[in-house]
Image (cartoon, rainbow, N blue to C red; front, side, top):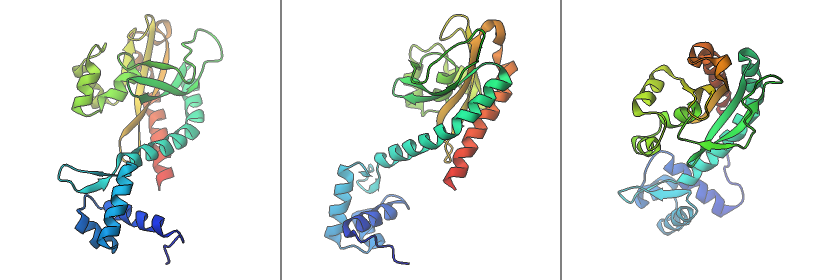
Length: 239
């Protein structure tokens, strides 16, 4: 099958990226893997590095760059948001509480989708709301599986501890009682990308009068099931 697009420079750049899919490569490795002339392979790899599509490891070898992960995350977010509406609505109906989907953006977590209770006491969190990563069950989920350095930084001035995060990793869900706001409780569970990375947190939240001081006992199974449905939708989309 002819893999030529008719745009030679793009075809050659695609060859470089495809060669790096197998792992780090020296310039000689790129030449061998692509069949390109050495000057051409070097010129394309350096140009792709400028755009962060290619990077270098500690040994100076060429590797796939961080921009590819960012683009993949953006594509994953689109698929995630497309699936989130009905899943959050079902979670709201099962629990009787407001449901949200959170993603981390730097030092904050952002509500990217929500299904609110139609009436009664609510913990209303509009889509687009930015809340701290220092408190709340969604923040715990988004931090619990981070690498040790990021986790250590995130725990500074946090309302929860490293021991609490270890417990969350064991049981797979988090709860908070009055951490973010007095009188409010929540339960959260992780959404995973097809590669297993935690990319979002599904939550239900509401007043302590309804959720009690052990909200996980009431709602963890439903929140876990919702998170798994969203994770499964991403796996199916990636097949």
